[in-house]
Image (tube, rainbow, N blue to C red; front, side, top):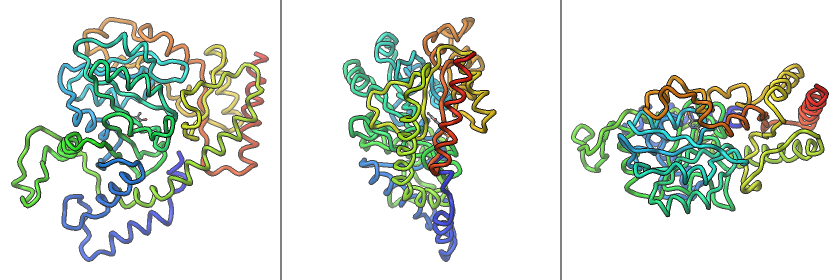
Length: 387
Ligand SMILES: *Cc1c(COP(=O)(O)O)cnc(C)c1O
């Protein structure tokens, strides 16, 4: 929860500036609009891309990214069976068909499973980097070979990279979230980035009822070429985002350093298998993931951590929101998932997730806090191994 930890005076100054203006206008297309444009320009600069478009949430961002990339009814979209549910909801909302596939040892899309899932209806692959890079070379090559759009829902991975390239900039379009659990926090908020002018235009239109934003025309006379929704970011949100963005380098630096220190002191523990990486140097510091031998041990481990005052992040406590194998409220609307035991469709992913622990690594940790977390993990490991 890095950005949320650091919300403070700087954000207030940006908001105050908004209210100091003669005529406060919190609506992004009004005459007072300037914070949203500034946030977008700064974000594009930090990411090294041509276009950034701010929207109202990370869910809105992936919905816009998919729509901007031309995903529509009947298209199959391959994504991972381990993800927060939002991208799957967005695929579904566009009338497209989500095709989750198994993860590999890096906890990301297994390129082999992706290739096996490609059909004549496949239109795109959505990679979901979970605080670290997927195997982007293999996945990019696959998308090129089969003529598929590569989309990055990098909501969890702002600031992470793959061999020096920022995540979110490798596919044709990338999306981010600024909710309370993400690198930057604006209350609610999201961003879409791309170098492709056509995708950018379509994203902006989709986020604003289809308005084509033609210059020189009053808003009411704006033409439309595709339908949309209202996913606009407000000026108030953008003001917070500008101040948060200035803290990003500090957030990434501190959490990576904290994670390095913590991991170093846990490496000797028997029975803990740390997750593999396609490029560990590019991983963010937000979380530390390791696996035990079996599910019962992971659940016991979680209890031991809780009894020492430490929680986990997603694994295992919020698995139900992050694993396709339990989405009986959503997937059975599609023929291919009706009347089947969902969990059995992604057996490897289920096994891997259910025996894993994901630790939250805060930004603000002094040596005492690091010692306490390390001690809690060490004694939990001891308890579990004795069990
Ligand atoms: C958090 C998250 C989202 C949704 O972001 P919100 O801002 O909460 O709507 C989308 N995709 C992924 C991968 C996420 O982790």
